[in-house]
Image 1 (tube, rainbow, N blue to C red):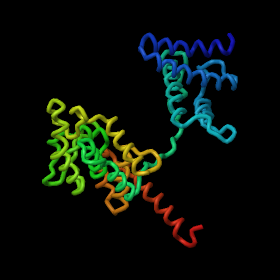
Image 2 (tube, helix red, strand yellow; image 1 turned 30 degrees about the horizontal axis):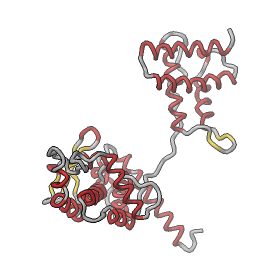
Image 3 (cartoon, one colour; image 1 turned 180 degrees about the vertical axis):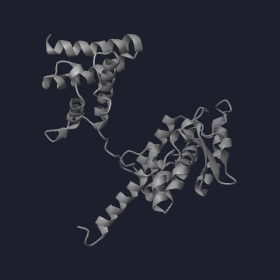
Image 4 (cartoon, rainbow, N blue to C red; image 1 turned 90 degrees about the vertical axis):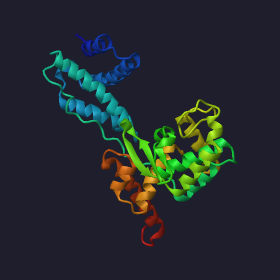
Length: 309
């Protein structure tokens, strides 16, 4: 039997299983077909004609080949290579379960490590410019946007947490706000004086006007028509303020959350405290922000120390 026929037919049994028995979506099936096509081509180049004869070293070599530089450029991003490995694992696991192969050679193969991406944070001066630029006169929308941005930076909220706030989640008298994070897990976070003042101004002078256009929702932040402010509208408010403030680069709601964490650590806050404020389940997630501050220290050192170069 020709090499191509055997490999393709073995793979096709898995595709049929996914389509008929598992009922995976058309897009997922197409994605798996592309990934397996790449894998089978790799095996053919090495003279392998039967998936039952594949061993773990071949699968490991395939994963390495996907990210190996070609003319100085990586062939695939680590995330894409990892996705392809998921398809390869599924194929070999299926063949082992069906008795086509005696073992699963892909089970212990680790995906390539993705490059560590440091969170984007802007400086305190840029945050102040951004907050000032969020106010355009005395319109209800302007007062709302200023309050929204102040809250995002003051409490380090995710955008979904901020737009999900109800009025009852605020305790302005004692300076705290209740946020509902991932898995609807609640946490109480302090809110600063300037944010409280911005929220108070919004509640007194703007929210009643916006609420009159809607159906009396308990939401803190309301849209132009009186409904709960959407995440998309929050993004637009921040991006527009960034343009007016002359801040280059991509600025998003998460930029304020990253800046909140980075500035706290720069100011000497304990990482465990920052973990609680951010609502991270593990301190490992929070530790990435310490790398941001170290990176900044290196920049300052390189620029300022006379013997740094």
